[in-house]
Figure (tube, rainbow, N blue to C red):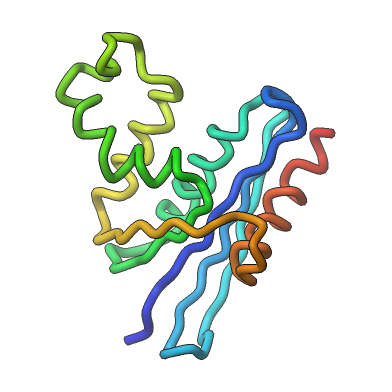
Amino acid sequence: MPDLFAYTDGACSGNPGPGGWGALLQAKDGATVVKQRELNGGAAETTNNRMELLAAIAALEALERPSDITIVTDSAYVKNGVTSWIHGWKRNGWKTSTRQPVKNEDLWRRLDTAQARHRVTWQWVKGHAGHPENERADELARAGMKPYK
């Protein structure tokens, strides 16, 4: 059975401003890509963090059955949020440690629900550092933003 990966990225022109998200899903047998799917979208008035979250959400929601998947993101916000911070937020009624409402709560809840169906490994990579799949996710995100600019 091939290994499943999703490379995700968000983009924003201004923050807030028009934005886009992109996700490159790949099934790999070793280093060989056996199946690939590209997803993207955007919004007229958004933030980069919202687009980063939507990329990961879209990747997970696109899976038709529960899966083992590695999500590769260049967003420390997404990786740290979903692997660490979210547990405290949920325990505190979606409030931060300073009792403030969690920003982007709607998308964090959606991501939490989307990942619950799967066995997800989260991996961070440095953005714009020549990682081919991350660069492709960035291209998809910028293409998703284009209609809104």
